[in-house]
Structures are given as C-alpha cells and as structure tokens.
Image (cartoon, rainbow, N blue to C red; front, side, top):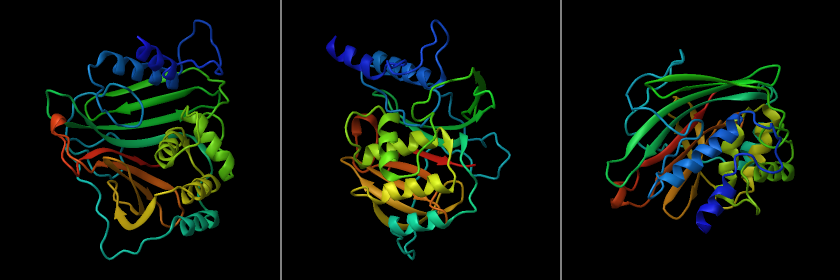
Length: 296
C-alpha cells in the first residue's frame, strides 16, 4: 500500500500549487499524468511504452504514411538506431550554443508543438512492438488548445478549454541558463538538481509544449553545454531526412542521442536505444526504445 500511495502522490494530476477548477474537467497535462498512474497501477510489471507525449494508449501499428502532407519518412515497424557519419567532425555544444545566439532569423517563440514519435511497447508474453504516433498541439487566442493525435491507424482530435496555469511548462521559458534549469526542474516535478538524463527529459517536456524561437533555442543549447557526460559524436541524418549534429549520453543500459540543428542549435530529436539485451522482454542491444522528432 505504501508504494501505491507514493506512486499516487508523484502522479497527482492536480498538484497543490496548480489552479483548481472545482468539478471541472482535467486539462491535457493532468489527464496525461492520471493515465500514466493508471497504466502503472494495473500492470503486474510496468510496460515500457516510451513515446513522448500525448495519449497514454496508442492504437494498432501499421506501416503507413503519417497524416500530414509533408514529405517525410513513413513510420516503420522496427526503426534502426541512427548512425553517425564516419567522415563527419563533431561540433562541441559550446560552439553550437554560440551559433544559436547568432541565429537571429529563426522564427519566434510560439506555444504549441508538432512531434512525431516511435515508441517500443514491451510485455512479458509478447514480442516488442514499435508504435508510431504524430501529435500536433495548437493553442488559440483565448488560451484554449486543440490536440490532434494520429497513430497511423486512427486520428483523434480533442479541444481543451482555456487554462490559466502559469507554472512550467505552460509559462514562457526563460532566456538564461540558471532560470531555465529551475524551470525544467519544476516542469518535470523533480525535487533535486537535474542530472543529465533528467535535463534531457526536461527538454523533451519543453518541446512538447513550445515551438522555440532563436533566443530560447540558444538558452537550451547553453544549458546542455554544461551537462556532464553529453558528448559530441558527429553528424547524423534523422528520420525526417534532416542533417543534425549528434550528442550522446550513456546511461546504465541505454544510450540517449540528442540531435540538434548545426546552424541554429535547435533541438531536432531525441533517440534512446538499448545497450544491453533483455531476453525477458525480447529486447536486443541496439534496439530503439523511443525516438521523437520535433518540426515546425
């Protein structure tokens, strides 16, 4: 019971410092946290369903083009990990941050997101399956917003009423490193200073809420430049055909790869791959756990 109560406290869909709406509906972020709680509570062992974002339940996998009219790669059943070009030269995050500061022509900050993700779903009695998803969040002048989700099989649209929350990640991201670290810590409900893995999680939460402008991208790049263990490895081509500089962070059984625009310093994507096999779940070293690509 103690473990369940602790889980409930951490997943609280309506934190004490958040706005209260009486008996009104939960907003999108509260609903996500409640869904995550229910997933963990009902599973004998938690399913590792890693997609960033949006809905907690993903429909059947199909190898089909995602619904936008952009020319992009189709979702695939088992994406291979991105490969660093052997002839490329790594670029330090400090250099990329300086480029980001000089990229004044980038679009300005805008609330909303457009993310395409591939997520590995695992269970004890079935082989791993990769689920594709595309999510678009559009905010309106009255602070209401619409979420469009497409999993390659079904497309759903949900409109949410205005939200008056001024807590991260709903509030505007700051333009200096110290304040951004504090912002990401609050946005990820982390009680202690962020380590590199948590910092990458915070960037993911930020990009699931905002289209960053030049100043915000530069601040993110400067913050990541101070992260321990995040190493430049060279150039990659991401799953949307974009060239980017890759930075790798090794954890106990996974490798996280951050892909950034070499000219503007904007974050293009995040990939997590297994570095160790897990026969119980049918996972091999090198399998992609999750991948997210943000577009405008």
